[in-house]
Amino acid sequence: MSGKRRIAVTVNGTRYEREVEPRLLLGDFLRSELDLTGTHFGCEHGICGACTVILNGDSVRACLVFAVQADGGEVLTVEGLGSVEALHPLQQAFHEHHGLQCGYCTPGMLMTALDLIRKHGRLTEAAVRAGISGNLCRCTGYQNIVTAICAAAAAMQSGEPAGDA
Image 1 (cartoon, one colour):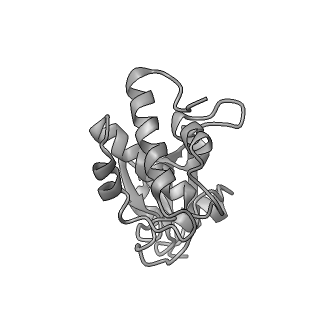
Image 2 (spheres, helix red, strand yellow; image 1 turned 90 degrees about the horizontal axis):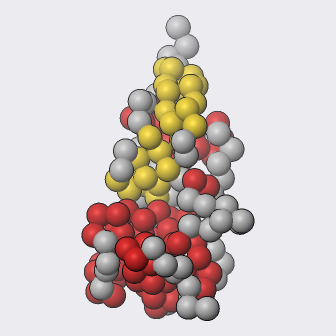
């Protein structure tokens, strides 16, 4: 017997079945097995937040979760948020409010922000700063990220666009 385990997981609305090694990380599964490379690995210790995805409604670090733990579950990655033609309000807000520079942390920031907004609705600047405190960014100084998340939260509550243009 190979030691592999068959899993079924729904990712961004599509169901996948694969045989995986029990020790395969969810992030590696997404990147290598499904070619969803938007989930970035930074520290591989759960500290930086770059690999954050939504698993069964909660944000998780894909570097700390095994793919077999997602068996039967639903995963949302940054690729499932929106498209170039139809940006998600968070993506639109990050664009409008210059919430990214190099972009390495952005997928994790977006997924963390989505979880925050879904669970808390409108957010204060202090609540956003606390909510993203586990996501590291070396480029932006965070202010534009916080502004973008607040704008997206307000837009998602009201149904209006998240930008200021």
